[in-house]
Length: 191
Image 1 (cartoon, helix red, strand yellow):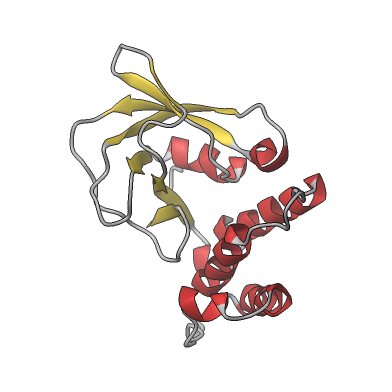
Image 2: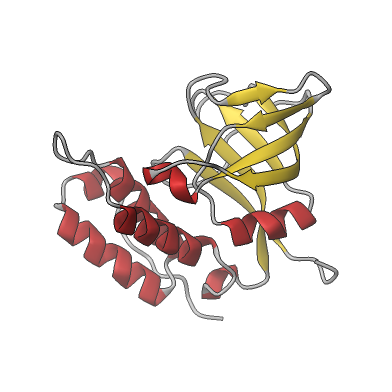
């Protein structure tokens, strides 16, 4: 097994670099299989605000989605035979949540590669919504379905999760400075 790439980058250090340098670091991290560093770069780039009056082009959004798919996909060497077994999202409380009144809810629109969602659904993954990473989730449960989100721009590549609510809160899981955290698990042979 290859030795993991060690680095000294943190979200705060990445913020000191210009966009081009962070993109170069991301590409090198992807090439070397340093998934956490690549994800940290993706989150940094996603959080950078466009110039006033500018918006992300559909090609930029698709490029980000492809990069996210590379980061979380099974073709990444360190994620071979792995599945996302838990999704953690930070956002305004209940923003985009639709409570169905039968113990289930739709959990808004999140930029997650659809291929990962399919595997996660088959593996019995859960979802947890947080108002901050330092607080336990306020809504959580088993993912029982999903649908592509209808939208444009950043939401064009997003999915909405159907969740069977559970009462037990969950602590934040995930690395990086963004609003998304993943819990990874090994794929079982039958998955």
